Length: 376
Ligand code: GDP
Ligand code: MN
Image 1: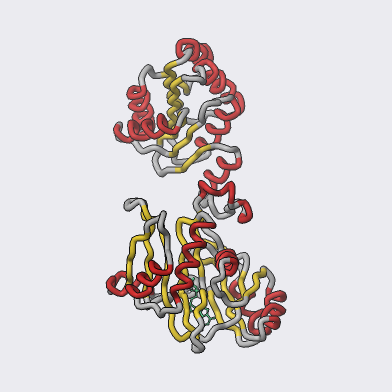
Image 2: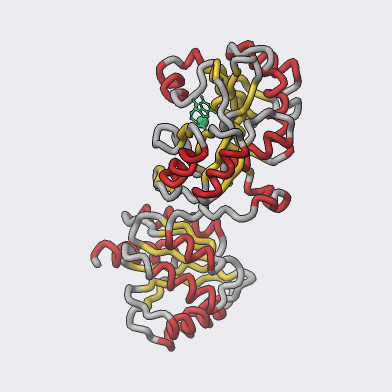
């Protein structure tokens, strides 16, 4: 989960990284009061979980409290790369002498972390990295040894950062470790006219596997961009929308993944990933079918179940009951195998729904679902 800038700023402050004074609000009137508290002038900054806010008009300098109110009114509600601005942060302006870039990011391939730093930070960092890669230092960080003062000195030297930034580099590593982050980025890290070093903007991505101990940040309200995924998540389903035409339901992530592959091998494209897990109750089945059928791209649905602890007759009962609540509008191909498969198949035969057909094997079921989807 990504944090907002103001949350990253709060974390930085807790770890002794100097940040500008700032407050957050969703109201232009309050923005005016905040600017007054900050001494009159303020930088008004859109709080959205995407970069490039400055270029999109989401970071503006206000000369006095009245201007801060007007600017906040402009920025609130703005759309920045598909993110609606719900809050602005007002920060005390800083006289910038130099802008640097520093980050630590998980490097999965290397099984470690990477420090990325540059003396040419700011909004142009992507261009700098693309056109003059030598201006951006990339230094591997051993996750166990971490960033000591010596290591920070090495990073600062490689990137051409001033010696005062060594302390920030060490603290930023502590942020990554203590907050369970996969990425911490400061751009720009600035040097002021008086030689102070401040983090002017921050991005922190937390490791979702550690969410249980980072509860203070709450749920990620921007996590589900796709409305079907949001609906499925609300029902507790393990659903991922894909852009094909064969809807897929299976039990167990491994089986569902293989089912996606087999469907693709049959020349069709999976419309989703949906793992109903071990339970496979009637409610999960009807919730799952309802979500899949509400995707207009779906032309056929494949239910692929290998009964282990879950018995196939329970799954078949689930399908039959789901057919009571969900109006089946596209063909459903079912493959049941494993525990109580014969009983499960008999239940579906008895129901004899005109749009439900069964297949004996996973390959056969995938072929049939693909055929129904491509000829529909
Ligand atoms: P981003 O565009 O989303 O990365 O937003 P930033 O917070 O990094 O702001 C973009 C740019 O605005 C920075 O690189 C700075 O050049 C400028 N900026 C932000 N805050 C201040 C400030 O307090 N004073 C000055 N002079 N410039 C600022
Ligand atoms: Mn920035």
